[in-house]
Amino acid sequence: MESGTILDGILRWKRIEVDRAKRTRTIKDVRRGLAEAPAPRDLVAALRVPGVSLIAEIKRASPSKGLIRADLDAVTLAREYEISGAAAISVLTDRRFFQGDLDDLRTVRKHVGLPVLRKDFILDSYQVYEARAAGADALLLITAALGDDELLGLYQLTRALGMCALVEVHSEAELERALQVGPDIIGVNNRDLRTFRVDLETTARLRPLVPADVILVAESGVHTQDDVARLAEIGADAMLVGESLVRAPDTARKVRELLAG
Image: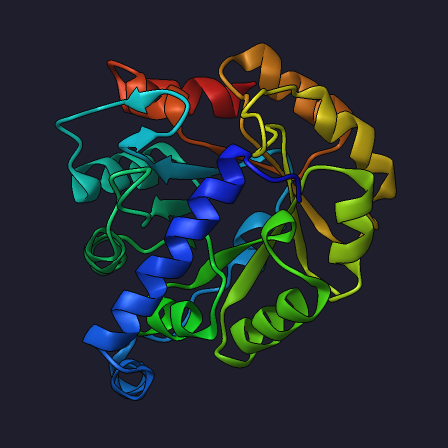
């Protein structure tokens, strides 16, 4: 990774945050919570349907856009997503950069019947156990943030705990590395996490390199029916959409609009 990028800064803080969490609550204590966690729901099955399915995201803020929606209520928004036809829900749990919280995921998981994905910068097995104990059915693993051994270890632990992993890539080199772990789901992030520039054609460029039996999720840059039509043309199986849904004055209408694309 290049030094001094936005992603580097986030990862430096995330390591500090995880170390602090371990001192507050030991990994042994976190693992004790696994016994009380609800059985995982199958994200792969939820996305393996005709058309471009939707992972709808709960997202209060971002490093590039700042505060997106100050009055966001996670449960209310999640229910709107579910009623309107989303296949799964992504919950941002990073506090410092996205104003999320693991409690958002806990409460959302209790109030919807869809698979719920923890979206965060997962660097440590502590966070994987933490996700499952909170009720997560899946989590995000960002290839750009992890070495090969780290990616494989975290992927295997995620699967061992019964969760799905959305393995995120942004380039050909990252995709080649990600495929080595044998993922069921690949997410192509159209946003370059080093610069935060967005280009929907990133998905088009990488689509031919993703095996047909691997679910392809397009992340970021989806705002209109035309964008969704382009994803269908490319051959994406699903889209992960946050900002355009959170900003919409009528969330349910926006979900239906995208799914009609």
